[in-house]
Length: 258
Image (tube, rainbow, N blue to C red; front, side):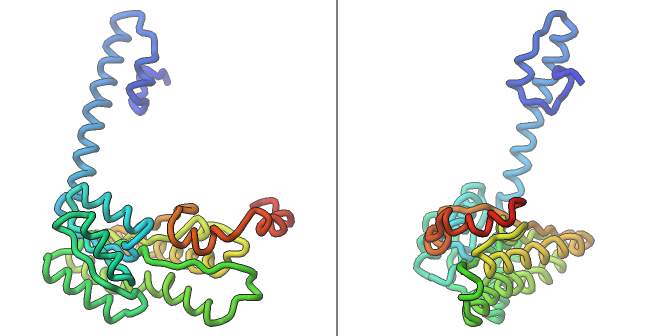
């Protein structure tokens, strides 16, 4: 198909085409008008999704959670920032503006999580987004990692996400709308040597999210899963930042597919 008649091309690409007659000029003008109109409508639609919505973010005191909170607040969303560190949550909420709130929350505490979500719903008459973002990282040689550390990362990264889903999903089903967004990782989509505990939990989050996504459609509820690569935040500095290429090479040599 000619670039001049492919409306998926951006305006800059369309302008690069050579118009040698009136027909070409008309096609180009139409595509530029379509692109401009579609772009404006899409931008308005995206903003309308967030404007006036109510969103809960776990692990919002730093890293990805903080950036999510700030980005939504700029789009008119009422953001409830939660974190196990109450001071960090309050700081981010103040950055978000007067409409934001903050609460201390340990995502491992299912009862506290459910109570908070119910209070948010009762106060605002809806809960539109929940970002189950809180998590930790544990890495190293698997044979050196004890049961206590495995239990800790499973409790936070898997059960913490599950607690959020079980708290918000019934409300979203009842109201016939809502969006659950769970933070996994690139490590949840493939093998991650020296990060076996972390990879285990993120694979579980991916499995939960993709399965629930299909189940929730009939109720008007959306489910998404974020799979970012290494982001420069506390988990990176505490765990991944301590690992070097030399740590990974012995594992990669036997598995070139990685």
